[in-house]
Length: 368
Image (cartoon, rainbow, N blue to C red; front, side, top):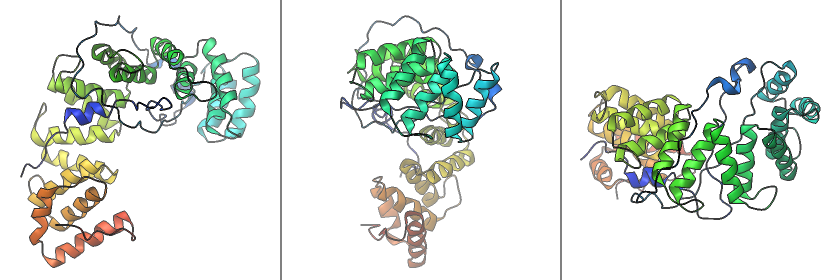
């Protein structure tokens, strides 16, 4: 039985594609952890100017298969550190004092401050401290975008593409994403890359997609790092380079990207593009399994069932196998492995799985 195998390119690249529904949103990155206002200067990590678009290449296999989009996250407006009033707005927002942030921001926004306008768009869009109002969110985002705020451009682009707060307008959304990306917004570059990869809103251009992913990855965006790693792994839009792929997976896994943790663990376990380190691989698989990655749960079950890379523990292996199976990641080879499991280990594994999944979940369909 093969213990650990990489995820196929059709799964990795296909997972980046957008849904074909006209109302679907592009997946966004989550807001970064709170930092002191002075550390959140917008110019702290300038992104290079995107290069000119390359000629459209032949599309890679499976890259255009649409999947349902991931849930969208929000924009975190950054303050202007040399303005103590704006720092107060941002500080209140980071502490969860949204009503205070609104009261402070409205005064600043009426005085023409674009960061405060972006903050108001965020508060209205996400019902933070105030009733949700997409139309008002769009209005404030547009004012800030017209004043040159790249985060507002990105947020407004996502609302245009989703058709929130106004009519659906993907073309305007694309223009706003391009403008935001040009100003160094990594989330805009990442999402624009997805549009070029998907080939529905924009002509499919995997090389241009790779260029934009590189901009976002260099700015520290973990989703872009993971996506670009899949490109290097298979030579999609870039020259194949497994070592570069692994370095990007490592960077994304350090930022807690679960998919990257799984792929980097598999690379470590097999010694692909990096020195072999089974102990580190198993530790990463455990981490990703506890973050509810069915693939990690399956791979961890294989390791524990075989005793290759970690001490054999068939009861624990059964637990993770059942959890992965409940999430749709069945494994007939493991079903066979557990067919002759002792009654004691079977009972122990099933009880552990029930505790993880909840008392109402049945785990008895194990080995058949």
